[in-house]
Amino acid sequence: MPCLRYIDTATKNQILGALEAELMVKDVIQRFQVSKQTIWRLRKQMESEGNVKNRAKSGRPRKTTENQDRAMVRHNKKDPNRSATDSIAYANEVLGVQISKRTAQRRLKRAGLFARRPAKKPLFKKKHRKARLEFVRSHEHWTKEDWSRILWSDETKFNLFNPDGRPIRMRYKPRYVRPTVKFGGGSLMA
Image 1 (tube, rainbow, N blue to C red):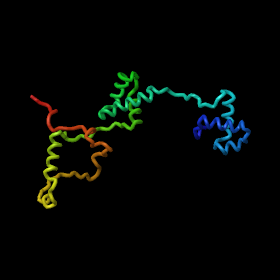
Image 2 (cartoon, rainbow, N blue to C red):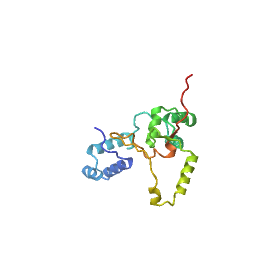
Image 3 (cartoon, one colour):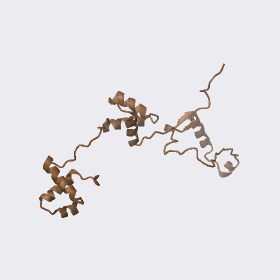
Image 4 (cartoon, rainbow, N blue to C red):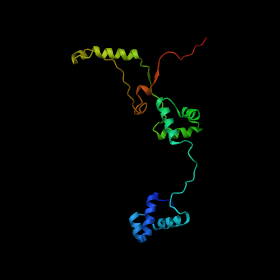
C-alpha cells in the first residue's frame, strides 16, 4: 500500500521521542496523525539502522545539476528562437554534459519555456516606425471634425467558424515575431 503522506525526518524523531517519553501509542497517533503501522515501522527502522532518515530512492540519477539547468534556461532566454536542439549543443560544448533532446525539452518546460512557432508579420523597419511617429505628431491636435472628413478603407477579416490561431501572451512582441517580406526567395526558370 502506498504512503499517503510524506513524513520528514524531524517529525519521525519527534514521534520516537514521544514513545521514549512513554506516551501511549493512541496519544501519539492522535498527536501526529499517523497510523499504528507507521509507528511500529519507525521503531523497527530505528532498531535495525540506528536512524530514521529516508532511504535512498531507486531510479536513474539526473544528468544535469540545478546550476546547469539554470545556465541552459539563461542561454535560451537570450534568444527566444533557440530550440531544445540548441540547448543540447550548448550543454555538450559549454557545460560538458551529454543530454538527450527529451531531457532538454523537460528542463526548458519546467522553466516555462515552451516550444512555440513565432508569429509571422510584415517586416517593420526603423524608417516605418519613424514615418508612423511623424504621422501621429502631425495629426496630434486634430479634432473630431477633422477626422470625420477622412474616408477610411481598412479591411477586416471575420471568421465564421474557427479562429486562425490562439495568440500566446507575448506572441506579438517584436522580440518574438519572425518578420516576413513580399519579395525575394522565389525561383527562376530558364
